[in-house]
Amino acid sequence: MIPRDAATRLAELARYYPVVTVTGPRQSGKTTLCRATFPALPYVSLEPLDVREFATADPRGFLASLPAGAVIDEVQRAPALFSYLQAEVDERPAPGRFILTGSQQLGPTAAVAQSLAGRTGLLELYPPSWGELQRFPSSPGDLFETLWTGAYPRIFDRGIPAHQWLADYVATYVQRDVRQLLNVGDLRTFTAFLRLCAGSTAGETHLSRLGADAGVSHHTAKAWLSVLEASYLLFRIPGWHATPRKQVVKTAKLHLVDSGVACYLLGIREPEQLRTHPLRGALFESWVAAELLKRGAHQGVRGDLHHYRDPSGLEVDLVWSDADRVTLVEVKSGATIAGDFTHGVERLAQRVRERAPGRAVATRVIHGGSEWQVRGGTQLVPWHAIDRLAWHDTVAPA
Image 1 (cartoon, rainbow, N blue to C red):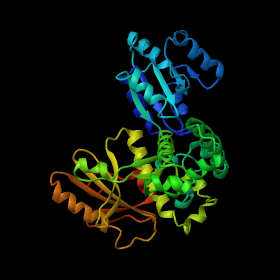
Image 2 (image 1 turned 180 degrees about the vertical axis):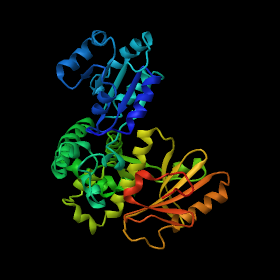
Image 3 (image 1 turned 45 degrees about the vertical axis):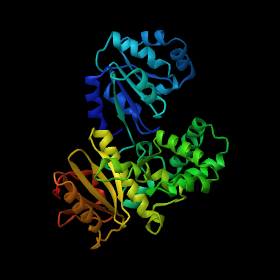
Image 4 (image 1 turned 30 degrees about the horizontal axis):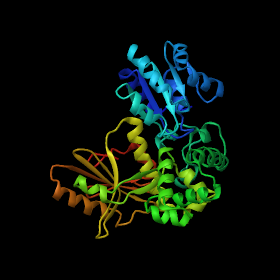
């Protein structure tokens, strides 16, 4: 298995807190990361029924059997354990005693907020970033292969054909586990909803339209979308405005976390189909958005991710902002740099400078070609160099 960028952040949190909780989608590498980072800790999985029953029926005895702490996997299987864990670490608060992993935000995070607040550090682990994928001997060779294959590590670590692994992943995790979490009886309708979400990637979220197209109510569509987001299959980014209170009225954009899952749900069965596919640009935009999401989560980079659209028609795909800096990012899947690539980010940058003169502004264009360029104050960055991009410098060095 490759080294993960999040290992540094995980070890850092374990120096501060007696418990560290690692969440993220199934098969993103949580167990491998935790065991590799803490090889001296015992490993216990709550997936086997007998171990889960021990932790649920006798939580004090279960924790007493782990006096030095442990890596406890699939902790959402025994939610009652969190209350007893609170008492355990209050009595013996040595840093890094327990490392917990879970595959759904709704499980571990809700219990952590109630029982372990102030006692645990939180880390979200997504599938490997582009920079991490290049550490595999068999990493993708071009943009279309990268988008089509996605980033789940078993595809590269075990040499499993991407179309086979993604089919099994959707059948087992998405159509079985997530559907059971939602208590959905109609597999066909739920699968149709999933495919509609994939077809809406990089688009603004309209729940009524999604629900109507899938044949379910607005409220059902809202509930399904929330659980898919909590299961790390997709994420939504809100609209952005220089005035924070105006952000909440902007429609959010939906992005699938993994482009390979999106391609599978869309019926794209080989990379070359992406060359002329109508959603090529949307899939590429979601890939870039996911790279930014992973960067923040894995490296502990503070900042918020938004998109921008105003009534005049000005749009910018991604806005990465913190208290005093804003980075405007336009995403273009074309391999040939066109003269209008920078127009949107430059117009919005000018508005930000006028309305918030104390805020630093950087502009970027991520494109599907191979050439670095700087036009004005905007850097045009090839897709394969996204991991080397300095997001907040005014003009980053090539």
